[in-house]
Length: 410
Length: 106
Ligand SMILES: Cc1cc2nc3c(=O)[nH]c(=O)nc-3n(C[C@H](O)[C@H](O)[C@H](O)COP(=O)(O)OP(=O)(O)OC[C@H]3O[C@@H](n4cnc5c(N)ncnc54)[C@H](O)[C@@H]3O)c2cc1C
Ligand code: FES
Image 1 (cartoon, rainbow over the protein chains, first blue to last red):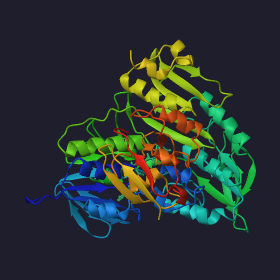
Image 2: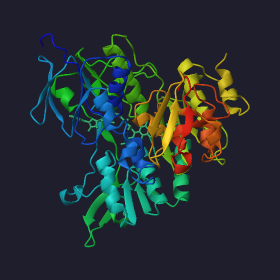
Image 3: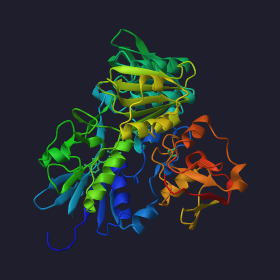
Image 4: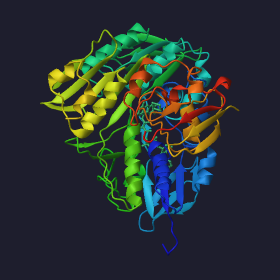
């Protein structure tokens, strides 16, 4: 490697990769930083893609983390529109698809997750839309003008957010949900039921326990879908949001330990101490979880990237922040704090009818997660309670007169 | 292009051009200004884009939503009468020259 400083190479310029750049420079890192991203755009934020982007003029500039000037001012070498193809751990180099080889002192893997493709015949596969990149949403936007009937496959956050956006744009929307509930893994049955009613009240046709049996092309360019429960639907556009799989290919090929993601320790190091990893692609043992988990959220990507930057800067740090996530669907802001797996008791504050309520999820007497609907103040307070390990009694949780912030002081 | 004056906690003034339609949060963040984070990309979900708006401009701002109002109760730095979430303020010609103070913490 010689005496020359090779610096930090970051693969993936999403939420984790970008945060790593910013935290390194803010922390005073003076060595070279090189970013490689297969996406041709300057690093940008994903959450608005399924939410406000199409409603607010679809201006890609509004999504950028920083303007181009930032990267030159901060001396960040950008390789955009080019993928990393292989890692040589012995030589500390990364090979790019354009033949270039980059040397690193520390390598950060932040490749995110890849969309799970809908299983449809080949001649239809390239007509199916997904919402993962700016390119994806711009392609949707070019076709949305003339499309009136949309079928969304998948009842997770992204599918539902897009369905809500499309309803606001006046489209007819059917959502096919494989399981018995929307947002099945991520929210309680109470919250799921409440949001199902809201989607239906806003005119979205949500069908549970169903998926595509067959799909064929119509002469007018649209699609005819036969569902597994025997219904026929026709639509102009088919959009799928059926989940993602962590992008472990490079890491696996390089012999790094992978499970349901690239395995990292509390310092976000992989099984090679010179290689860190963060974001949607990694799995790890969180102090609040019993098993190895993988989290798909901005908070997780950002906080892990901050830990990596601190460790590279020689200020040892561990990732232990309480997870949080949000979703916007129609006029409802859902916010989830903590990890709710294994909860056995729910306390509700506020009525479902008011459209503003908070669900406290307990395991035994310990508060492990708080889900709110249009209750951002409760969400903020809940994050502090969870971080401090404070569990309100069930009575305190249910009583709107007990200010959550006041419980922090005890 | 209309301008925004961001005054950081130390009192340094940064005058930036922010295109109409962009939010004050985006204007600060995209230009790499410290003091505003914008972790939720402007979804009104994180309160890390808190700012204090100069009195002269307070009346010209869009009305505060209930969500913004509640979220402001959870900011890291103290909420004042002039507190707003900068992701909820979109630039217009009317706001040209607006001065916002950035809090100590987000
Ligand atoms: C439509 C949508 C809405 C969302 N809404 C929310 C929300 O409301 N709240 C929330 O908390 N989270 C939300 N998320 C999830 C959140 O965006 C992700 O958790 C976050 O982006 C993860 O960050 P990351 O850096 O790990 O991966 P990403 O942001 O996905 O970035 C990974 C990057 O790596 C690049 N890459 C991959 N492989 C290679 C390679 N071999 N070579 C070079 N580059 C490579 C990709 O091009 C990509 O740019 C949403 C996601 C989507 C898609
Ligand atoms: S950017 Fe999150 S509330 Fe403004």
